[in-house]
Image 1 (cartoon, rainbow, N blue to C red):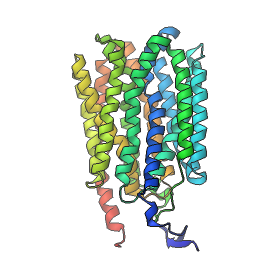
Image 2 (cartoon, rainbow, N blue to C red):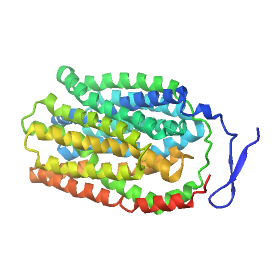
Image 3 (cartoon, rainbow, N blue to C red):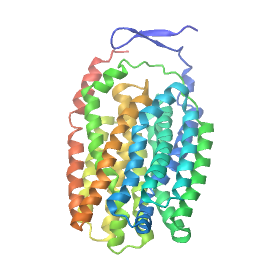
Image 4 (cartoon, helix red, strand yellow):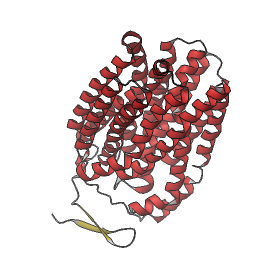
Length: 417
């Protein structure tokens, strides 16, 4: 069959492949991609978001302050966010299998090396690069794969796929805390290295490049990245990323300082993950029937208001309530981000578009946890830092308010079928 051409956004013809059979989309094969993505994200984020359980034993062994120790996590997030456009582009060009397999090796080696470090700054390299590469090679390529295998149930499929992050968060921190208590943090990282490598290699074997889409995006990549709509999405994501990683690093130590046990403190991160599962799956499904942009904005508002609950928390039950509300808003944000990108800009080059958006998380992560650590070290209190996080989170919600205007403009410009 000959390739089909259509006029692009600039008027030039855009070539595409022959249309695939419609039965390929939303098929059993498509749902297999959802399962592989769920498991891969469970593994990489279960490791990454368990860092709060390692925070205190690592800081104690190396005699490091909070800001210096939290930088291990911040550098990790920066690496996976900066590499997102690279791994997304490589997956678009060469397929996801080799990219995910590379992430499996990188993560395993990084965690194994972290188990042997004798200075904290070495963890910036081993953990930061290893886990950062692992997450970058799993998240953007595999989420883009799911987006490309679905037409009718795309938002639901994406919500289920990224729920793997929530389940990983539920399991990762408590498992890490229990293993650290019995084996120490070094042996725990070695076990995580073996498990994550095996899981990711299995997912790489399962994943397949999506079929060519039956719709061609009329928005060129360069134009999309320069558009005001993408600018508001990006700025809002930067702001929310400043605060969103703070509980994963500091909530366990905050709870422990207020009398909770080590396991109960680490379990709060798991509660965030459990609540985020409901947010990811529930809002992803609702987005198939309701406005995806409106739900995205609501997730940011819930996330921002949750920090008011943390600010007022004086007991463990209040911390649990904060973790539930924060997790629900965070889950909606993660689940709906790829759906909003697909809705606003189409699914052509979705891996590259998502990767570009997720670089915002690296900026926020490099600012948020270290800044909070400095505030706590200098004031001796968490409250000032939590209040600052509340203000920043509300600003991230405000930056999304103009987005519906650009959504309406996009809908008016689309041709009628």
